[in-house]
Image 1 (cartoon, helix red, strand yellow):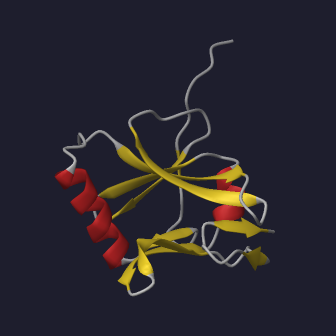
Image 2 (cartoon, rainbow, N blue to C red; image 1 turned 45 degrees about the vertical axis):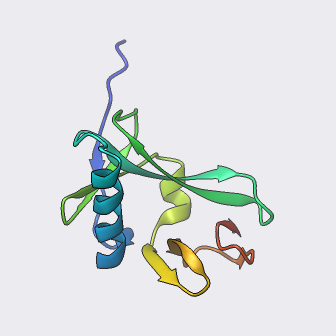
Length: 121
């Protein structure tokens, strides 16, 4: 049997990008001449001081089970395992005194580390 790629659409309440995060993603793509067909891939991987870490990057490939969300022209791709940990997460961008970077507000996280990029459930 042939392995076909499937794409499911996320509902808007599963992962949210704030307007500031959307603006920063578009800025990064423009400044680095990242082609239009590259989407923002959001994920979770094992590691970090709290057990799991967030991942962000650009990817042109859709993989089996990937889910897609379009926020103001930014396509967000999430693999099927990561979506279990990211439901309800809001991704923001901070450029305040404590540093620049994307900030994850994840209601599923039972513990987080000081850096904000690692969490546990």
